[in-house]
Amino acid sequence: MIETRTSSAELYGTGNVPVLYVGGYGRSGSTVVDIALAQFPGIFGTGEIGNLPRHVWLNDEYCACGDRVHACPLWSLIVARWLEREPPGTMEHYRRLCESFEAIRNPRQMLGAMFWTSGFQNYARLTKSLFTVILQTTGCRVIVDSSKSPIRALQLSRIPGIDLSLIHLMRDGRGVAWSMMKTHEVNPSIGVQRPVGGAPAIRTAHRWMAFNLLTEFAASQVGAQRSIRLRYEDFTVDPVAALHPVLAMVGAAQAASDPTNLAEIVPGHQVAGSRIRMGGPLHISRDTSWEINMPEEDRRKVQRRAGWMLRRYGYL
Image 1 (cartoon, rainbow, N blue to C red):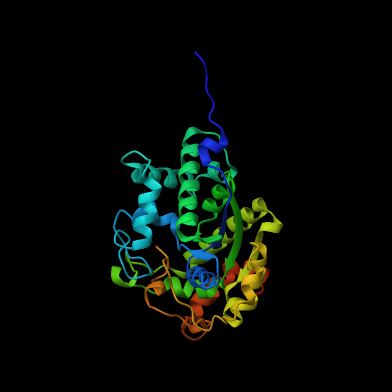
Image 2: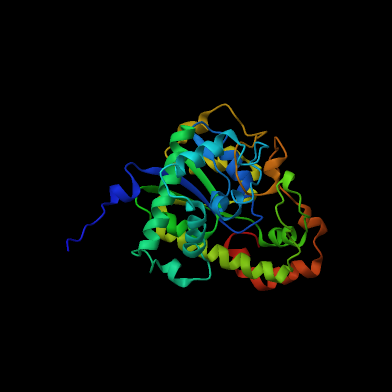
């Protein structure tokens, strides 16, 4: 019996796809950063594209353009082109692969122990082909993926043909905890697909630390030349200046000379993310509500548990 081997070109296609990944913890402003980056020429913001196979396509959720994804002229075309040569059931198969290989509780994924399995090869091939179709369909030069998960960032960095750059986006953990304490009822038309919020401050403090440490690890694997830290608070003060190093990192520094000052940003086709993507044009501003309204007891809880990391990032 003759054994045949499949080449990398056959598995993943030819040509590199530049992907700018926004990693970190939730409620840290990733959707705003995604939309802001997409204002520059040649950059396409997908939103949390990692959720496309998980629930966005399955539940026909809303695109930031206002249409449901099945009716969105862009995403319906992208998905049709992506799956046109795949067997029936590929979206569900890809959902299971994503849930397996991007599982944050599985240390084997963090260490890349599954890298050589056939399952990972299928995951990698479908992921690369999806990004390739997005690149070809939109005509962009850089794709922004603001899925945030540090494990997804690690896996994307291991896929041949994906030229990954990473933003480690952080926000003051006290502000994140205050945001997580607030609740939002289901309202799909404004981007709230399931009940969210209501998390105790101490739980958020633990998760905020864990996700930021994992994102630091992902950045170390991507490399210093391809990763950058960005504090959301600095971004809100001067968005263009804060994003200039990011644009330079992905070879789009010329875009920063565009006359736009990001005084108003307009959502495009972000398929998932914060509900703010559904509200029309946005004005970038710092949210200081936690400084005024967060109960002092909850603030102290976060500072006691996460004080060392708040100091590490310059918040204390």
